[in-house]
Image (cartoon, rainbow, N blue to C red; front, side):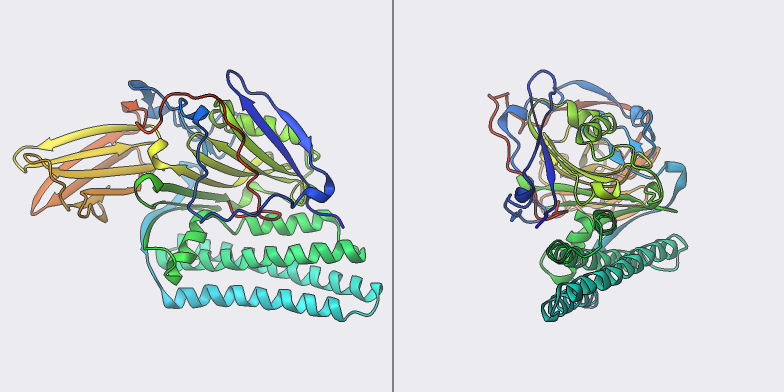
Length: 479
């Protein structure tokens, strides 16, 4: 029985990166344990990587965050952390924030989508087990491959319809996010059914090739993401309410959120460019993982140049058979998962998880003496985490103040006087806090330089430690 083959490349580098590639035996593709950590979890960063954040006083020019890196359309360059995928600024149609919380109707809708796919999987198993001959079993597999292909097409079309309706103002932020969460649940279940179909294909010899399965797995990846998974959990009450940043273009969807608290506070981000992938183009990598890594290192240079034990997982099956590649890269700030199309040579989907207290930030403090308030703003990069803290200017005690960013209300700082959110992609960002009629306002521009200090949590370097285990939970896995 054939199983998805993963080529795992481990980079252990202290002064300069080196690549050691090893192909796993065909029977060991699924041998790594499934990830059991919650969706917001980040693996501990090895001590050897802890000296990689910029030191105190490092100067960062926000203007260097260009929309396109050289030879990398759609990739936004960010200094001192990972680059990220985003639609061109000139193509952005809507930007918003939405507070999502437990929602019975949304939860039932998502559960219904998952139930439909579970029933589909059970029907496949029952039909395959009832088949009395190899020929009948091959016919069952071929028929269900057609059904899953039709289902995948319907889900992708539904996403495009929802995006068009949202951009036209026909549906609200919450309606759009509900739809995306429902599609993510359906895609996750669809992928599990694909796993069953692949096993039956291998057993029966049905004429369903790897490229066809790879396309379906890739379709599922383009419908999922860590923020959508978070929303699905929020709607059922399994996760607390979450504020989500939403940005869209004609073919682009970006979702981001800061979740958790304390040392576990995590920045989640996902981006999809629907037109960056083409199924009718020739794969220029031909399943060669070394060439894929070379391209990924151009797209995400900081992530690939950082020292210390890291891990990359290049899946040549099932994705590679369809000319698409899923790359998982651990780095000092967290984890990057990117999907590269071998035909267009472009990233069409990307998931990012970053531990907030490891990100380099610029800190600005402003006190309004007449108002008796002090506001402290910690900003990373446009589209990244933003923290606003308000305190009494005389006593230093935290203040529960209302916060507006670019004149958009984002809630209050709460009892601890602190609010985490996502910094919008804007040439000018203005933060205003208000408490009992007293206000403090702070603005900065995209081209403004700022002092960026290393997070205190990043201690001195230590000797290299062993590599973390592979983060793999099936052909695509939860990332």
